[in-house]
Image 1 (cartoon, rainbow, N blue to C red):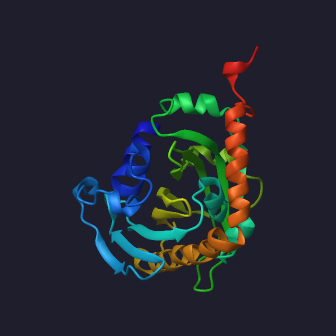
Image 2 (image 1 turned 180 degrees about the vertical axis):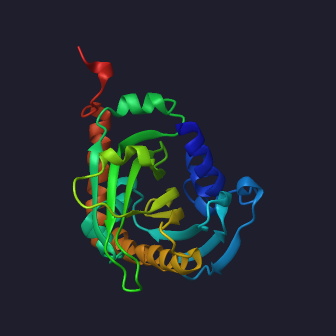
Length: 279
């Protein structure tokens, strides 16, 4: 149910809501235009960090969100560089880039890409939540952690939505146990679960954007959440520290090139595999 999933994401991420609804990009937009008065499920955020002078300017949490156990965490960062959802998603979905900030990752891969994006967009309401640029089932495997956490694995349906104003929404939802037959061959490990995952990006200028990362992660097993939550908090915080120099300097030219190429491809309306255009 895409309507319900995107409703839940927008309920916890004001920047995601702004990206989907539109009208909040450009100078004075982003976090400057979000509505923080609407609280998710009537619950209140607890602020853990707030500093305008830092890259990650704010971190908030809601304990035992929806009575699922682990806390819901939310990071806010204002980035320098071009706003591009696919490039930002590489820091989550590409093994090499992920290992730059998450040393516990052993592998991340897209097991089952969905190529018919037009059919996917129809299922999502045809523009109701932007344009779906990527969709598929992904697999994540972690290494054993030095503090005694055994390897974990996840099976997730993930996607990337792009909006007409350059905003983007990266999202994921954990698949159920009855999808385990989709797991890759090999030894099975304890299952971790992302009850909610999203990254909203909204451009605030030609070379800047705001990012809001929301995550409720259950490590599985009998691990207490008070022990695992700080690991998640610090890990994601470090991701922004790795991504910032890429977007600002190291990979800025590469990202701009990708944006131009995608713009040209979009104008030609090619590379859109669809059952709608099957003879």
